[in-house]
Image 1: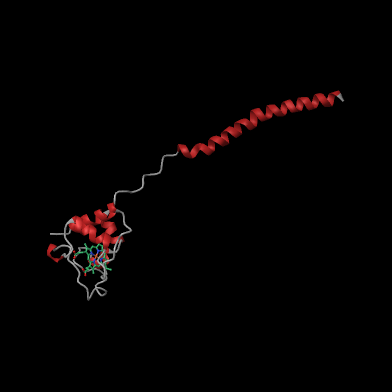
Image 2: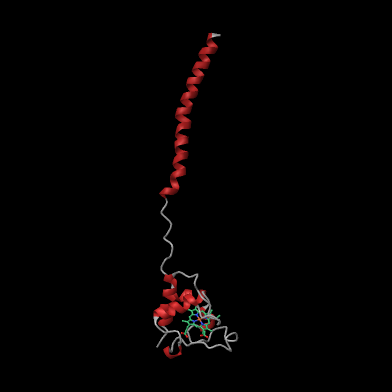
Length: 138
Ligand code: HEC
């Protein structure tokens, strides 16, 4: 019986050694694998600089006001009975042609007309589009 005891003792020693030599490094390796995403480069920062021309198109301004702002977009049929300003000609604005006035019109819209309020847009975005509209003026 003694040899069994000594075998078991030896076995448990060998097993402990196995744990130490084989499993421990594996465990450490696994845990460092979990941390590895931290070593990856950080994601690029969110684009906070508005791209005015793209926003003028994406928000549909272009469809009513036209690519050059003269009111000749793809929705001329819809606007057949509406007044539509010519962004190039300051005298055709009735709500103001300054950047601030244009931004205010974009934010609040013009009630009762096809010019809806873009109140969901961030101030920086509205300002950028207003600037873009103002630059169409001649
Ligand atoms: C569905 C068509 C439509 C869309 C889309 C549209 N507009 Fe208009 N917008 C109009 C109409 C029509 C008017 C004139 C309303 C009136 O006074 O009768 C107008 C008026 C304006 C004015 C006021 C000009 C003035 O007379 O002082 C500004 C500035 C303007 N739009 C900018 C924009 C911008 C910028 C966008 C996009 C974010 C936009 N609009 C989207 C139809 C549209």
